[in-house]
Length: 157
Image (cartoon, rainbow, N blue to C red; front, side):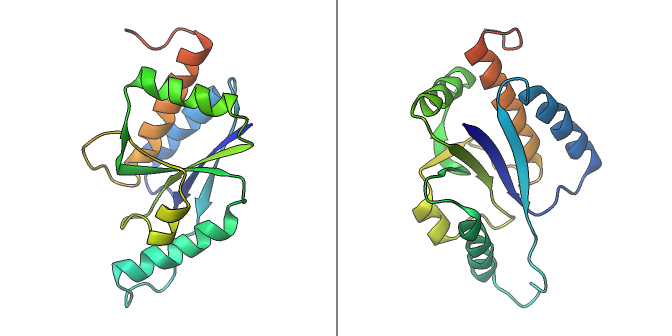
């Protein structure tokens, strides 16, 4: 079983990249994990947000496999505590998913076709965060969930 984090566009800020690299190293002690960048679209000045979302969505859907379990990081998704998120992940691991793909969309979110393909939507907060910052927040929460599942010190009750 593999967990992947897909992100639209490169991470723009060094402090976010550094934090993500720290959590990537930590996560590899618990599971097969990697992140992938969906390239930014070129020449989008004359495109409307819905057109941008659709083109990004087309790129995403081309990369997905039929049996991938796709989870959108979406502010309108299910809310979890850290313990509930760990339980949710553990359940997915037990369901023998070959690959779980967590997807963070671009600045405008997801296309309708990506929403239709998604298996779940998860919110990390009721607040809206930039699509850049949520990358680091997600990776910290995934690491926290893995320490809860494995019973290693990190999360405090």
